Structure formats: C-alpha cells, structure tokens
Length: 517
Image 1 (tube, one colour):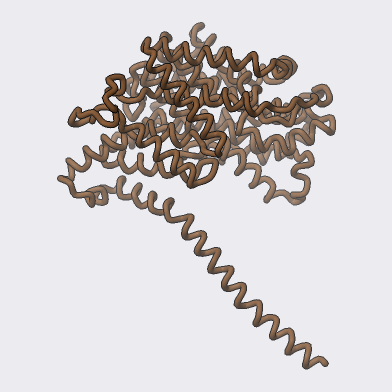
Image 2: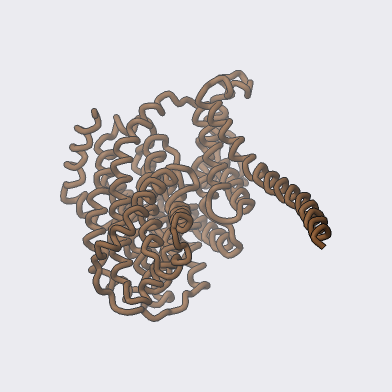
C-alpha cells in the first residue's frame, strides 16, 4: 500500500486551478472531437502537440489525456442520435443505440452509455493505479535484450492484432521501421537515406509524421468522403435509465470493464477492438441474441464500458515501459519526449507528480464527462451542421502553423504535406496508418536495443534465449506469428474430416433404407 501517499499527493497536483482548467478543456475538446466524424483523438492530439510545447509537462499531458478518453464519450452521441459514429470505438454502439432512439428511448441509451463509460473508466483508473507501479517495479529488470524482444513483439501485435487487413498492416509497419532508420547512424554517425539533404541528418521528426498522417491526411480524406446529413431522431428525454435497465446492463458493464482493461494494455488492442469484442460476447451470452440490433440495452452498455476502460489502461505500457499500445499513445509518447520526459520504469519514482497527477486527472475528468455528457447533447448536434468546407481549411492551417512553431522549419511543413498525402492515400486504399506510426516510434528503440544486445552477447543471437524474460517474449512472438497459420491448417483439417465422414453417412443411410424396403 506504499502507493497511497503519492496517489493522495497526486490529487493535490490535479486540483491546482491551472491543471483543473486544462483537464476540463481537454475533456471538452475530446467530446467535441468525438462528435465530429472522422477526425478522432489521434489526429486532434497530433494537431495540438505544438500547443503543449509551452506548457508544464503535467498540465500538457493532463489536457491531452482528457482529449483521448473524452472522445470516447463524444462518439456515442452521434452514434445514438444520428446513426453516425463520431469515433471508431463507437461503431458497434450504432447497432442498438440508434434502434433505441427510433423507439423513443434515445435518452435511455445515452444515459446507459454515460454511466457505463464512467464505471469502465473509473474501475480502469483504480486498476491503473494498482498495477502500473507493480509493472514499473518489475520493468527495472529490463535490459537491452528484454526491450528488444518486447519491441519486436509489440510491432508484430500492432501489425496482426489491430484493425484492418493483416497484410496491409504488416506493410505499413515495415514502412514505419524503414522511416525510423533515416538520419545518422546511432552508433557510427554515418548518414543513412538522407540523399544529401542536411535537414534529414537528424532523422524525420515524429511530429511531422503524426501531424501529416493523422492530421492533414484525415482532413483531405474527410473532404472527399463527405458524410450524408441525416435527420435527428426524437428529442432526448428520460435520460436517467430505469432500475430495470440498470439491472439488465449491470452484467455487461462489469464484463466490459474487465475486458476493456485487459485488451487496452495489449499493443494493437485499444478502445475499438475492446468495444467490438464486448459486443460479440454480450450477443453470445444473451438468451435471445435476436434482440441485438433491435434495441438491446446490453449492446450499448458493454461496448461503451469497454472502450473507456481500454482508453485508460492503454496508459500502463506507455508510462511504465515507454512502449505505446496504440497510435494515440504513440502521439502521447511524442508529447512526453517534447517535454524532456522519457517514460519508463523510472517515471514513477523520478516524476511522481506527473505519473499520479495524470492518473488522478482521469478520475476528475470522468466525473466532469458524466456531468457534461447529457446537457451538451443539443450543442454538439448543432456543430455537425457546420460545413466541412469551413472546418477543413481552418484545421489544415492550424496543423501547418503548429508544426512550424516547434522548429521554425519550412522543411518540416513540407514533410507534413508529404505525409498528409501519404496518410490520405493509405486511408483511401485501406491501409491503417496506426501500424506505420507505432513502428516508427518503436523503430529507434528496436534498433538501439538489438545492437546493444548483440554487443553484450558478442554477436551470438542465441543469447536472447539465455535470459528468462527475453526468452519468454520471443516464444510469445512465435506463437502470435504462427497462430494464423495454425488456425488455417486446423480449419482445413476439420473440413477434410467432415467431407470424409459425409459419404460414409450417406452409404449407411442407403443400406438402412434398402433393409427397410
């Protein structure tokens, strides 16, 4: 229980007026971004990175974290009222949330979603406070071999477990690793892939890639893919759910909290995967699964609880190991590095004000979101009527000015445009940009860890298997890598066996029918 004192002190940090103000600003922006289709928290955090440069580290991370979990709330509003998911993690909420709205129970759906989100986020915060210091304590045993094995496993999980086509995700991750090699060699200082351009000697800036792929790329794509305007259903009324609704949704909220917390920690997991898995589980457990898609309250409660729990737990690998679990956490890692803070096992002891301040800000932020979520519904729906042609140019200008203010470099603005076009093309042709950015972030750590490890082992790669933690991670790597092939072989084997048994069954039936005749 030695974490109680710093945890209590963390409330003193977050309750400072400036931190409380930026916590409110963060969750308000997050809700707004969640309502606006297409942009998402990843792009927003990337665009706002330059603003965080002049803030205190604790204040900046509190605001950016608020944007992330606030967006999970906002995406629910349009999913229920307009059948338009403002955030990817709210896609499955559309199925039953909009069905409830058509039945005149939009208020019930939004109320259940708000309560479930609060419960999932709050339970995940307690889990974060309990498990993060423990993980950080064990992470002190990590050396270059362990970090190398974990980074390789992380890249593989992002490429194979995440959303989208697996081959396309692997290609995107490979491109990200290649981009991480641009610049000076970390050991010899020799230039690599700079093509004689002095601006590339220090490598490609993370902010240029993030703001280009997630910011400008999303803006260009959203202009092309304009969403159809749909009419708002009946007015929101009876926001507080009945006792019967709460009882019916309680099990889904409990399962969603545990599931979201577990999947949020995994690289490639996150809020979107958690909400989809939660919906699938609730539908399988239901006595009458045909209710789902027609207004099942569990179909709203489970996914909304899971995505908020996952949004919170994804901070564990970032803060304790310095490894982002998803694309948004990669942007958060960039924000920490800009502030001169390297996340990892030492963060809990060296920067307890930041660690516990951020964790406790999530608790305050979830209370603010619960209070704000319903009264602001009408305002957020009106914002949807603002034309894309007005919002897009303003956002693009802010993006370019933001990247320029960091290093006063025209070349960085050119990079943002280049990666913006790349991000647009990736989205247009079905490539997920998340693996690219995550692999780019992990690429530097992977290269340095592998090369340091090979020096420790005198060039003997089998040395990774002599250390328990790295050997375990390597075994997990091969299990994840070979699992899809094993599953295909198993399915093919079962299909062959079923085909062999069918003729025998038919022959037996013919013999029996002959005897009867």
